[in-house]
Image 1: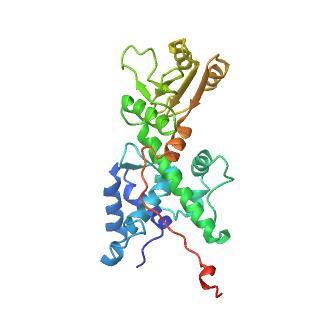
Image 2: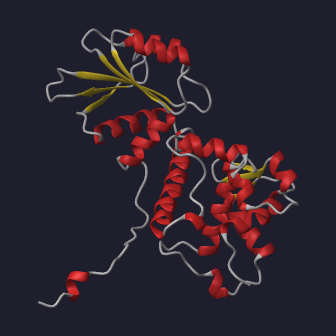
Amino acid sequence: MEIPKFHETFIPILRVLENGETLQAREMYQKVIDLFYSELTDEQLEQTTKSGDRLIINRIAWGKSYLKKGGYIEFPKRGFVKITEKGQKNSSSNLTLNQVENSENFLEFYNQENPQSSGVPTKIQNASPEDLIDEGFNLIDVQVKDELLEKLKTIDPFYFEKVILILLKKMGYGDFIETSKTGDGGIDGIINEDKLGLDKIYIQAKRYGENKVREKDIRNFIGAMSGDTQKGVFVTTTSFDIAAVKKAHDAHHTIILIDGQKLVDLMYQYNVGIQIRATYEVKELDNDFFEVE
């Protein structure tokens, strides 16, 4: 028996979850192995990727990720998985990679994460090795950003405010001041752009799970900004409704809006809340080495 490709784990994952039970991801991984891949040798089960992950777990995890993006399973809370109604309907079928990638949920997710993309990831038969490497890194980027955003939506709201200030500090802005958690008038932090604090940027951070930032929130933020600054940054883990965007645009102040997707893009770029797990080297022939003078 060979180690399954990640898309070959789709049906085993759905079968393990088809009774509707919510399972911890690790428990689900083990059940999939026990029920469907028990014939793998110990050597196969311990085989690792170049980054050191167990290969069989890595394959199942990617299968889980694709099923989530396709709407076949859901993550009711961090670290847990559960089948959806769509997944129930497909648990007894031969669900292919092509079906998942071309499902409405998957395309919607992928295009939201990659607005410059024209569709799903590069097909193997049409790709050069460099294309496959680039696409592989791109898929990992999307996965990490998705997990990062989910994490931000569940952390303590006060700590979320601190995360935003740390991010702005890493982006090259000046020292920050955390405001009092009560009676701060809607201001969560102040960035001093210069050492003397002559130029200030006021920060508002809203950690929402689903709700959008509305016009009232922007209006309150503007009202809370004192007369010694004209600059503000409003950050949320979700998005801004049309009225909120218009209010910020029409304000006499300069107000930058950062939604959830932009936030994780910046955190990813400046390595806030993430870490480098592995570094890969791509080597090529050194023709200069073989030149004879």
